[in-house]
Amino acid sequence: MPRIVAPRKFIDAADHQVGQDRPRKLKSTGPAREALEPALIEPVERVNQAKLDALAMNEELVNVVVHETTDKNANQLPDLYIRGVPQRFFRGKTQAVKWKFIELLARCKETTYTQEKYQDANGTEGYKQIPHTALKYPFSLVDAPPKFHDRLKAVLAEG
Image (cartoon, rainbow, N blue to C red; front, side):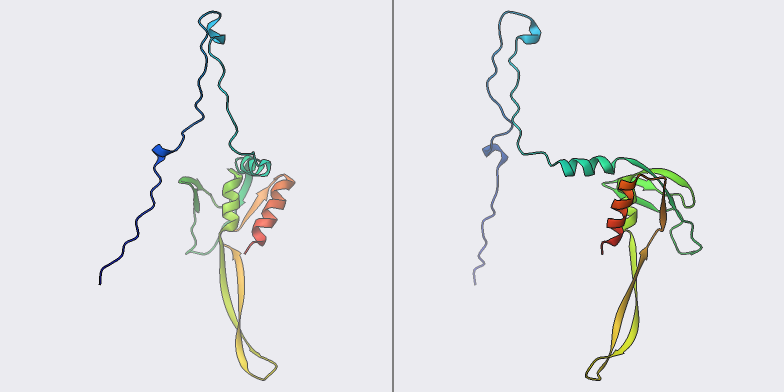
């Protein structure tokens, strides 16, 4: 039986306009600074102020301390990466870290389950899976502004 192959859909960049090119007039007389007509830059999309605020917040430094642990198997020097940029956390020491790494630290959670036997209304026995979620690297913020407390509460509440 012959095999049917669907043609691939290619988008060739050369078939589309690149940039916002338009002719600009160059005056032959007058100061050189004013000889070339200024470029017209057209905005492509609206600026999302909430997104810009969140990006700015991500780069702010906040003091954090990752708690020490007695677990021999735990990572004693946790390091996290965002887009290839590392951040190492020294347990038990306060350090100034960009908020984006603290938010990532707050998202490092471990969930374990315990089982509990139960009986439903019909008398059938079964087991409930009870989740217990905790931070993989428990930490505290030190002298952080209230906006970070609010954001941290929201991140910790996520599943």
